[in-house]
Length: 311
Image (cartoon, rainbow, N blue to C red; front, side):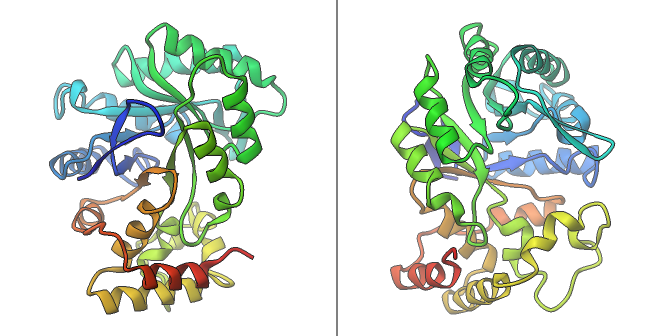
């Protein structure tokens, strides 16, 4: 698997990152262990998690595998703080106390004394940006985080954070795919101007770009799960179907999978350092790792961009 630098930094990561949002919920410990082994065997290095994933259980599950399944030194671990979900309600706290307390808890769950990349997971309108950045800087200066970044910040928020920070931010983690191209308007120009790399989450349009929802909803899919359906439903309506059909047509013509076409397009876009994939099963991950991830012919890429162009 290709290794890439994140923005202008010296941090090198695999072009695909393994996301752990499903760990400790849809994916049990045995399944997660198989995912990690398969990902590493395929050349992957970056594992992405967050304190908010399964209320910290995803981090704990990953921590339990370090030293047993994989050596800590072989992984690049990114995690996030500042966002929580309690009783179905989303809470944001990127205060210095909230962030650093969150980092301490993450390190304890992960069983390591540092993470490679640490993010403020959301913009907090109630906390001065300088205070949030001071927590990120302290974590880097103290060695508890090798690098720092921001997640789910829009274009102007990212530009302001990069300008105000007294140390280099290296990454922005945000949603980006053929079904969600709004980052191209402001976020990606801001990321590139500031020298950051983009970690694109939901690069397969929350699973829709694989084509598995064409004409039906599989019983074992997120869309069929009452708790997760709301995550997928926005891409099952409107113009999304025409984009999915165009991807399927391109895949057929190229002799590749729709998944491969979607990821290959994304990894060719400006500013993208890595695509964070979130397979729930080893079979799903194998399909991802079997992708060629080769650049699409220019005319195919242009056709996909035309049909998926944001309004």
